[in-house]
Length: 215
Image (cartoon, rainbow, N blue to C red; front, side, top):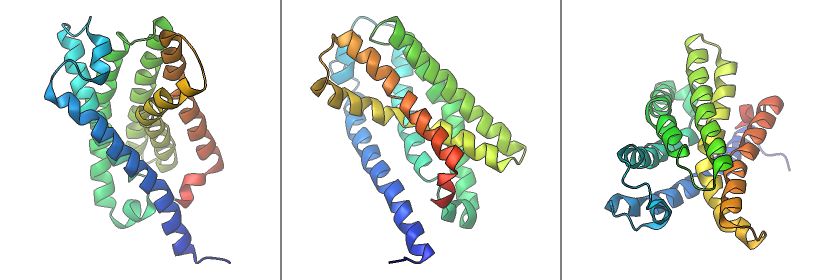
């Protein structure tokens, strides 16, 4: 049965937005306990030796808070109804997204990467993602300033693919130990690369196949 084009678009939008909204909600639930500002909460238990470093603490709290906003805003940046019918809303959300990534999320992620768990290769992975996240987002901004919409869209897809590493990383942390038995450092190193390289590969496929133009 052939569905009307509008129904197809609505279905595709729901397929895109609902899972991301669900995972964003999960990220919020995971993040809220950290704002008790106690140091015996989840991930912070692994960072006891560096909690005295003020720069790291500031980077951690600004990163987790700003990244939640970026994660949420990015969901709506690729929906045609918002882009074309509510272009003012699209531009506002885009400006907030870009500002947060460039000014807070990526720089704070870079600082955190220097102290990452998992050894040197995990540090390299998280450093690379911070640099690429900043670069792709900056290019998205520069391209829209030149009114190069196609290139702007491509760089935003790459940027958001790296934003989603926040979700994929935590998913692998839960899933992979059930399939691989590795030393904790080796496991975290593996997860650090898997959290973003497949995302970026999928982004390039979406760009090359022009799939997101139908969302």
